[in-house]
Length: 245
Image (cartoon, rainbow, N blue to C red; front, side, top):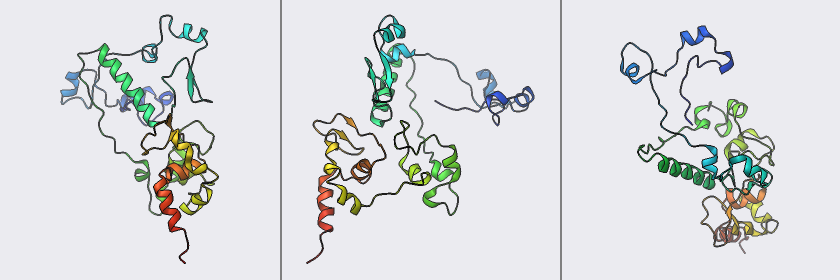
């Protein structure tokens, strides 16, 4: 979604007083005529062009959500990262499947409103680590990033967390070295899980099912974060660890 400045933007919605709204009316124009007028300080306008219901997006049959639930359906079960009798929300935090959901919604909207133009998203180059960076902060970390982020240090949390944020804000996190990973390869079965659940940047294997989920464990960190899913890299690093005779 887009966050646009509304009235009294410095206050939370429940704290927006009438006087604050009057003093800081925000940037929304009531009409296009206001937008082009020199006498009004507003900066943008918008209009409703269409909508999709959740039932449409999820592909529910006649009877809608109630019938779906009565048949034993579950939209999404966080314990298995999948739904029951529904696949739309499967692998909720994996980028590839998130993009598939976005593409699906865009396709449905285009079918329902064929005369509406396709307006691509503008590029977003915002980097919170650079924006909140202060001189001397380790790894471009800042306390404000850790305090106000929606990520989690809990290795078992279902919420997705950013790898750099984790290393900035989670006290018990250490980055594994290649040496440590090589000594642990037998423990993690030489990254064999990536033949089924593959890493970002890894070509999908012939029998691959989906992207691996970052669980914060050494398997993901060694095989995905450090790229040891690549057996050629494993072999090259192993040779470099052999003492010269």
